[in-house]
Structures are given as C-alpha cells and as structure tokens.
Length: 506
Image (tube, rainbow, N blue to C red):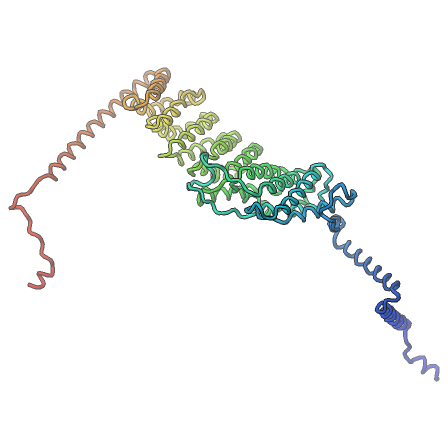
C-alpha cells in the first residue's frame, strides 16, 4: 500500500538534473572567465557557436555572393597577394575608388587624386590581363564605382546661341576630371565587353535605372566623354538583349524632349550614330514600333535649327529605314516637305542633298504618290535668289535615277517645272544658274519636244492673262488714288457733330 502511494508521487527528471548541472557549470565557467583563470571551455563553446553562425550565413548568402566579402588592404599591389586574394583585392580597390574629388581647384587633394588615378590604372590593367573574375560582389562593386564617378548633374548651359548643343564655330568644353573619368569609362567598357561576364547576374546591377542615367550623360559638353559613351552603349545594346526595348524608348524620349521642348542637347549626333547600326540590324518586315520611331522621332528631327550638327547621321538613319522598307520613301519625303525651311538657305541645301539620297532609293510607284507637291517645292528652289540653292536644285537632273523618274512622268512634272525655268531665263541674276537652267530645258526638249512647246504656249497664255490682270489692278489703284486726292468745296463741308452733353444741356 505504501509503495503504491510513493510510486504516484512526482519524480525529478534526469533532463532537469542535466540542465541544472549545465547551468552550474556555466556559472562556474563564467566566474572563471571573469577572473581570467580558465578560458578553454568557454573558448570551445564560443568557437562552436561561431561555426554554427557561419553555417547559417552560408546557407542564407551563397558562396558566390560571399566570395568577395573578406576585406583586403586596397593599397597592396596585385603582385603582392596570392591568387585567391586577388579577387578580394580587386573589390577593395573598387571600393577605394568610390571617393570623388573636386577638380575645380588644381591644388586641392593632389596626392589623393594621384593615388586614385594610379589605383584606377591598376584596376584597368588587372581587367585587361584577363585575371579578373566578375563574381557578383565584383559586379556590384564595379557598378557602384562607375555610378558614383560617372553619374552627375551637368551645370546649366550658358552658350550664347539658343540652338542647343555645340555648333561648328564653338570650341568644345573639356571636363577637368577627365584624367579620372577616362579610366573609369575604360573600365566600364572592359567590364561590359568581358567574355565570361554573366549577363543574368550583371543585369541586376546594370539595370534600367543605370541605363537611364548613362543615357543622360550624352548631354555632356565634352566630346571625348560622348565618344566613350557611344562605344559603351553600343556594347550594352549588343550584350544585354533585355535592355534593347528600354534603350530605344529612352532615346526616343530624349529626341522628343529635344525637338518639342528644349532644342538643347549635345549628344544627338552620337545617339543617331548608334541607331544607324541598330537600324541596319532590324529584321524585315519592320515592326510597327520601328516605323513609329521613324515617323515620330527621326522625321521631326529635321525641324530644329541645329540640324546641321547631326544631319549626316540623321540622313544615314533615314536611308537605312528606306533600305529596309522602300514604301517608307513616301513618308520620308512628305516629312521633308512638311519641315522644309523657308528662310534658312544652308538648311535648305541639306534638305535637297538628303532628298537626292532618298529619291535614289524610291521606286516609280512611290514616286508617283508625291511627285506633284515635291516638284512644286523644287520649282521654288529653282527660282531661289540664293544661287547655291538654285544650283543644287538644278543638279538633281544630273542624277540618272531621278532623271529616269522625271522622264517617265514628264507629262505631269514638265508643266509644273517649266514656268520656273522660263522665269529664271528672264530674271535670275547668276550666270551659273542661267547656264544650268538652259541645260535642264534642253533635257526637257530631248525628252518630248511637243510637250515643251505645249508648256511654252501655256506659259505665254498665263503671262498674257496675268498681264491683263495686272493692268486691271493698276487702273483700280489709280481710281482709288484719284478719289483719295479729291478736295471737297466749302458747300459740301459737313458740320461737326455736337457732343451728346450739349443736347442734354439745351
């Protein structure tokens, strides 16, 4: 009976005894650590805990990310460290170069600037040697260093002219920090062009934000910087296929803002030069997006006054589009006629030159769609008082393809152009233009003599009609002048009207 009662009483578990003993030992060890006597057990427990933490961190952060975490003295040379440590030194040197200096004062921080430049040169040599391995920490450090050094806000432009961008008469402005920027750009180019670069990892750091800020740098006034950016953007477009659509949209937005808002940008020529090679790689048939870029971005670029800075690159892009789709020739010529200059003769010369290149690639079917408004405009160019414009317009007849198109459609074109040629013969002041006019008339005579005679008769009729109208207009003005000069006699003088206040007073 007593044993049964005792068996039901609660017993102290062995686990609690173990915990109590552990706490006692822990207290003893802590007291010993505090006294500084015995640290072996506590050191073993600490190392075991650190090993557990290390295993957990390795599970959370993969080895590919943790490879470059260990810091190495950045002032060491790559020759002074072992091969496993070179990647860590590479990241340390990249982090060291994240400090930006003020180059406006040449006597400020000269030693630090020289040290940074030497470090950048070491990094460039290390990457060019092929020893660099762009792990994720290295990619992150490279992207951070390039962003800190390159991405900046440019000061306001205080150019004397309002055309925006550099003109041919202005000297370019050079960035005083170019001694550092040049090496950073070289590093970025080598990084983007690296054969073993993992694009899937790199795109996390070279993202849309990075590309947007990189495109903003094209507004730099330093032509050396824009040239470097041009090469880098071309490599990025070729390697990062995921960014291609974004780059095209971002460049379109830059062009929209330039054409319709500011008319100020320094890098339009470089951007168009890149797009010239991009357009040549477009697949056929062209996507609607690409056609919209031609209509909404490239054609309106003919509008700004500073078109001469980038006209060569613009013409190349337009011709590439027509080469891909000949039907776009009509769209391009309509756009040229829409933005045709009225008072700017130099710009008009550019338009005629571009028009000739476009017409060389235009088929007979597309030519017939726009020949009437086109030759009305060219007729006015033939009569231009600026002799270079008139000469350039006459020289279109020297192009075999254009002359062939004119010959096929002479029944429509000759009546439009021939009055301008006759007017030149009678009134133009320049002898070279007069000789060219006679040559063009001779070409029409050789094409169709009866058509030319009909045009001459029609021109004579129009001249007689216009002379009659001029005579009537002259007689009308004479009658008006006589009526205006008539002096009325005193009997017909009308008394002045009294103010209303006088009648009220009466």
